[in-house]
Length: 523
Image (cartoon, rainbow, N blue to C red; front, side):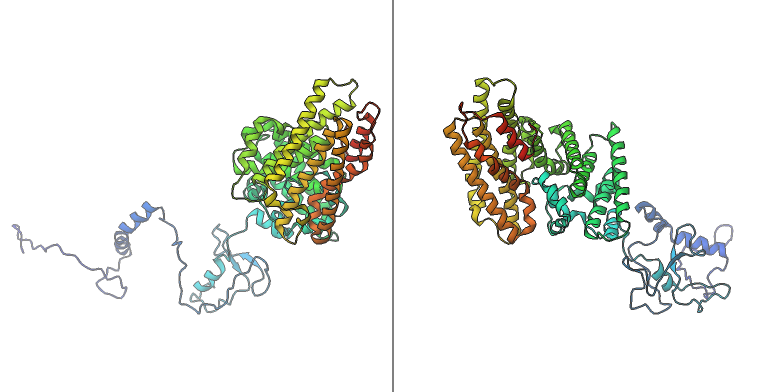
């Protein structure tokens, strides 16, 4: 076809481009070939830029090479062993390019390289050297592997039965912690992994506890003593900095670190004052944070981990427990999970702990009434007796309500974990029942006092019998009853004093002080 000027033109047509280098019709000019490739990949390039994968490798699959045979065994070193076929990792100066690509120094020879100017690994060798065996370990996982300890197995030492008596029992025989490693329950340890990665004070506290457990399990291992002390000093220093910071001091992570350090003191062989001090610090911070700061599951776990200790320590310190106040009732109730039959979050446990929170205040007021410098007013005595009676009635009702679930006390101890849970619950109930009876007895008439003391003596006998059966069948569960057996023995030691009625019918001051001395509380 010719145009008006006589110049011959061709119709536009689509031509397939043969990119084979041997095809003579393909342009040989390098710039032209680059332009062709650029035009051919234009749409693909735009799509990759839009999806965010432009300039990246195909992350969905590894390339398959045919230069050599694919090895039948995995040539990569495992995390548990760096010895064997591949001994050492080093950075290749030819392959690094600032990215830290690693190759193995004992990989197969590169003598068959195609280039004669310098040695090059085959693609299959590069693949075997650069593909990681697994995802890198987190700091928490690395720490657990280093010590061979999974701190989550200590969750049963972060529950409501922990007390001074528990600490004393562990100090007498630290190896008892081995029996705790077979338990695992809901606790604040469920949230440890993420906090360990992000909170320096939590990390330092955890390192301290894990090193101590390792020391208990391997007492002859060298250098552990200094390691434990180093971690402890660092944990205290890190925690102190967090407490001095106004933005951090009320954060759940700081409370977390304090409670974890209290666990360390529970396992430490030092004097009990350190554990008491840390426990008091945790209780004070829980109170300062207020009931509105326990909304998340993590915060509820921190609250529940210390509830038992808060109430028990208030009783020992002759103080009212702040948890008896109405504004903390909502926190207790928010913890309850309906589908848990017997656990730290079950209704049976929470309702009992709410009753227990009232015992320290009754005990403190009874101490004032009996041991005060001035005789108490009759109205104060009547009010005290009414509160003690109400606590006793609440405990009796609690026992009746959950009798089908708990069963007879004589059949409590069996060879299963469910009965361990029942032991913890019944231990708290029996302790509270003996204390409520003793407090009511202290402000009752002689006849009622004798009846109450007979009941106390019968309960103490049941506790001693239960403790003996538990020690024989499931000795690890005796820790759950450590505080209960201590109270039972104190009751039996002082029951004769309460049965000895004075001329005026009241309890003499020295008798009450003797009871407080034996039980280990301030008076």
